[in-house]
Image (cartoon, helix red, strand yellow):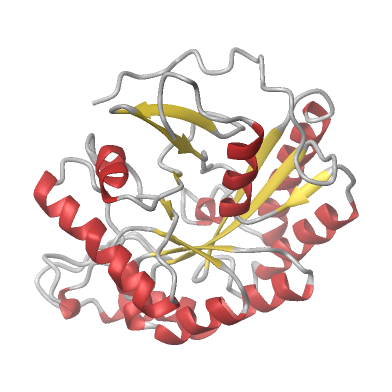
Length: 302
């Protein structure tokens, strides 16, 4: 396991600009998990317990939970992506490979709309404590599945909840991954040494994320999500006049895709489109620009 890095940039961020001489890069991430949630109906060992309510059905298929997840694939995905497409927002799909296997039309739509498809694991599950051999096999299976369904292997990875102590090393060993987002510790990408190689981390965020509608109902109305994200956006935009920054907006098809919440996403998008000094991009685009602007340390090969 790599030692924790509590030091980071120490506020001495690298001196570069994002494309268009902008200071703030914004990444919209739509999580596609429907069909990958744990369910006895899918042959899993248990049912997922967290959706619009927190309740686990034990010993029998949970048709309520499955139906709640189905909404994301049937309705939410289209409502969210069409809003973002009309606004010209580049989008990263954070997709579980099993979810794309269950909804191949989403994979086809992602290709047609030129969305980035980042891998969100095979199932919608944490990898913490996972057996190394099993995790290695799952990563390879994810790469094969996404490449088959979209015509391109994923260059990004993001585990649900916690990665294992081996995940980052296994991604490097697998090859082909440009970055992972298994970190929540900075407002800018950074390099980590994995073995003898430099590996890029593009941090994610849980606070500017619609999951808080399900997290003790921290968000209730669409405006709650929009107002918090706008506050974060403006704080980062002010700091970005002096040093480059990055912001992640986490979305879920079955959460923000509900009609009572989608207005919050529209409010946020409208606000960002009026702002100056901002580059909205996929995570792959952000990673590639950062690699070009801030090459990895000399002690580790890229």
